[in-house]
Amino acid sequence: MPDLALRSLGGAAVWTNDDLFAEVENLITPAPAEYRPSTFGHRGQIYDGWETRRRRSPDGGAPEATAVDQAIVRLGVPGIIHGVVVDTSWFVGNYPPTVSVEAATVEGHPSADEVANSAQWQTIVERSEVGGDRHNPFAVESTDLFTHVRLSIYPDGGVARLRVHGRGVPDPAMLGHGSFDLAALENGGMITDCSNMFYGSPNNLLMPGRARSMGEGWETSRRRDDANDWVQVRLADEGVPGLVELDTSYFLGNAPGAARVQGRNAGGEWFDVLEHTVLQPDTRHRFVVEGVGPMTEARVDIYPDGGMARFRLFGALTDAGRDEVDRRWSSGDN
Image (cartoon, rainbow, N blue to C red):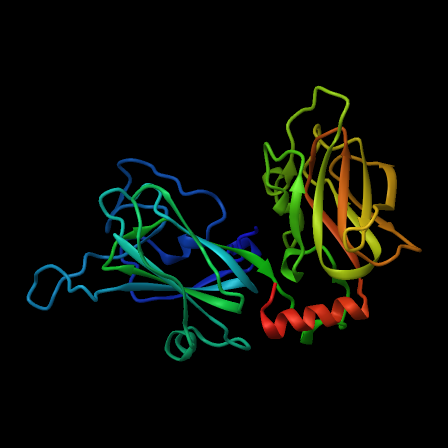
């Protein structure tokens, strides 16, 4: 599932009580954490993560059992959280022994202090042991919709990345006031399957904005058989498309030669949305599609392989699709 907290999806580290050694904003950097030995700043070794100072008790001794440092992240997209990863990569002698994660729903655009002091937090990961220099994954059972998460580390230490995996849910109040991308991650679209993701994640196809390099797209390895690569998308909900965008920006010698887009509704038979169409390298292709019925899933086939920056499927939710989005927003059932 996509990481709803990513900076590139609109996530932000809005508050922390301490980040003396390494900035809290590093928690939501899209790329994996890096380590460069013997790189010291005036506050010590430079870490690609969030690191707090060593806590002390009032008498100068070891910290009390209740000592805790915290960081709050606003999700780029409100959604249902299915799993959290507390990644301590490169933190070996300075990782926290235990952590917990809470989540909250806050309406509007509150200040950092308002979130820190007034949010009603719900525990989604109980206080648990973690290891150093490893990914520490936790399943989340809650079906509530959240906008913020709070990571607590006991008593102090460093965490490289915080990943918050789930499915976005669009705010019904924002629907019907402009073009709607049925496939976008921020609207609840998500990748459900793909043939190959050797060089780049297919989730990149559904990210907001334009890609800034080839590394921000989906790219497969070179095929040496007669088959082709493909990716399958679950849409925000049932909708009728009117425009397809297949963007091969930055893909020059490795763009697909052609593509085809299909759709289906509620697991039915696949039908053509865009027939087999020749593509150009480094080009934002846009195609008007007409006479297409309601659909809940899309499949993009590329021939025979290669890379693509973005996939957009602009259209409108049906009445049934809009009702389902309303239900998910109010109930959190996803």
